[in-house]
Image 1 (cartoon, each protein chain N blue to C red):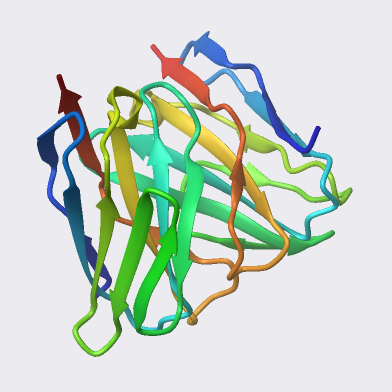
Image 2 (cartoon, each protein chain N blue to C red):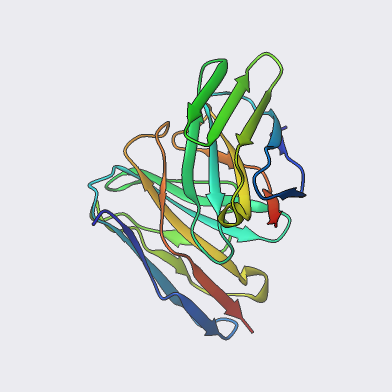
Length: 112
Length: 111
């Protein structure tokens, strides 16, 4: 089954404790992105990747890091999480920037 | 600047027709997407328009006017399961894979 898998689905952590949210897709897509979704603001792009070892900043990259060492995986790293990073995070992948994106099930992160 | 506007909330009756509007101002344009998102779930693709006109897909249709920076999603024969948020997103040609999303329209369908 074609899918984008994120882990964990839910995470509560403390300020400053490094964490990684994993994202994996099995469709051989070149394009992958991370978004955060906050009430009233919609989905905002954090980082995106056009292929292995090619990444770039989206609209809200501060406080986040990503890597793309393999085509299927695109982890999101929060080196020192802060409460304003409490949000619902989605990973997405697509064949091309103008084709439909497939989204993972989301990770609800709470930073206390 | 970049801006996508859509109504925050709408209500409609089961079996009726509803139109959700979206206006956009972006630096570039490579197409407009509509996604459906049920509460607590991932967005799922509904439609893509890159040329002016109407695209029909079953009960859902999407319209685009590039000169007016305007799109709408038309839902016919509404069902209770259509209660969800509908997200308008523009693919900005200024950057690879840059999708700019509106805040979404929460649609409530009642009997």
